[in-house]
Image (tube, rainbow, N blue to C red):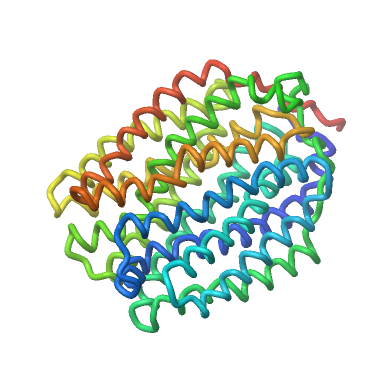
Length: 416
């Protein structure tokens, strides 16, 4: 029986505490991001904006995200990450508070862009910190817990944007995560821990894994990154437009559409993310390619459901969406763990920043705007259909990348 290494046991308590704090911060991060899609028809009505302009709001957030990511990644490999995480959270919380003074489309555009700066720091440093607490074989499980914030935060954002926005106006829901974000940042500053870089790594730091130039030639990193980028193109576009799609094509009110998407996202997200992490953990015992292969099947099974959502009869839209989201969330922990496992601690923050730049530049930075533009010239149904092409490309990349998965070594036995 393989026992955990002594270092893993020593870090158990601070690791779990830091994981809980980072999970809370990530939850607020995604609540803030998904309030906008939930309240989108209300915002669009006030500013008389086109679908293309509404999609451009998400583009603004991710453009700043991408521009800031390389610098924050470089800083994260050279300086303590804890104060930079706190600074990022404070910045996006203050930008969210500033929503009270938004009374034009371009002011909202600037506000959304500023949020991207704060999110870029947190999104890069938090996974790197967790990777230093847990060894390679445990990262899929741990990241599945950390990324539970995506479905739960998205659901709360959708519901808050649709329900509270319909009653109190679309600005009101943004205050849900502004003050809590500042409180959570203070708690992390008080209780969070900064692990030693590489303290839990078991794989050797080869040239391809431990240098920036090596990472750019690392096939395990590149296939996981671009498989996630094409997947993110679809996920970002769908998440930005699906409440509006249900409002227009399934006949739901703005409030009902936000609530429906929120309910589906939280149920599927929790179930799919946890089950995906659990399956990957089991599969890794017998197959080092499991993280890539499970991600492939997650995307492949989503495809027929997506076709039914966008092009099937209206009464099948919601049931098909429920099944599609479940399959889509299966890859959350495994694919992010594959990215972290493909590199070593000396360049991990830089590698995560490169990954985030790629998944947003080739993924969700432009997909909502592209979908909006197609919708303006044809229909939202056809606009969302573009995402199905990117899912096919993701399948091909992930299947091809499985052969480059690093061979994981078992943890050493601890002394009795």
